[in-house]
Image (cartoon, rainbow, N blue to C red; front, side, top):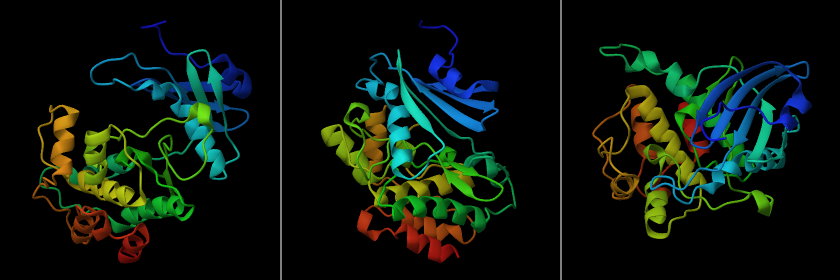
Length: 278
């Protein structure tokens, strides 16, 4: 029912028999839960269809995204997961990853008059997580700071619902219509403006990682446009390459600038980025 508190689908409750559950996120047609059970510690994602609005027109994919992500993770070799359908959409559960995300971890770097420089080892962990995906022939499609979880042993790249690179069950698939514009490469923004769709690429992922590192280190997004501008106006600014005059401090500055090159062919590959950092 609209407006009612979100609940876990019964099929998930039956599968996991939680000993504890915590709602982590409830927005834009999806909920994310942290669930502990005798089986293990999981992230549970549940999708709901978004009602048609001016901002979210043609976004019924939100109900399909959890199952699509589950199918992608299965293709990538993850076995401790499950996904399926419920009466309002789809769901998946997958291992929970503990730790702050990139933006949270670098918060001290963004404080006024801070002398703390973002550590290249953190950036390298993000690069390695993305490089692992690229090595398997996939593009993530939705790289952003919140999707890098900096764990005690390694960095995890999460939220693969929009990833492209292999077969996905037709019933759960949907066109890629862009991502958060702050991290959208110019060629992706232009394609979405012109056709309503785009094709995620590894080159666009590199751009998005550069934009993620920049905003996490400085608090400034890569492109210049009003905060409250419509998405179409934001995308025009990105497609036209209206870069801000802002640079990340330390060794990262020049590397991020290269990652944010307007032309995809001018950007380093994720492996070249890793080599530069290590």
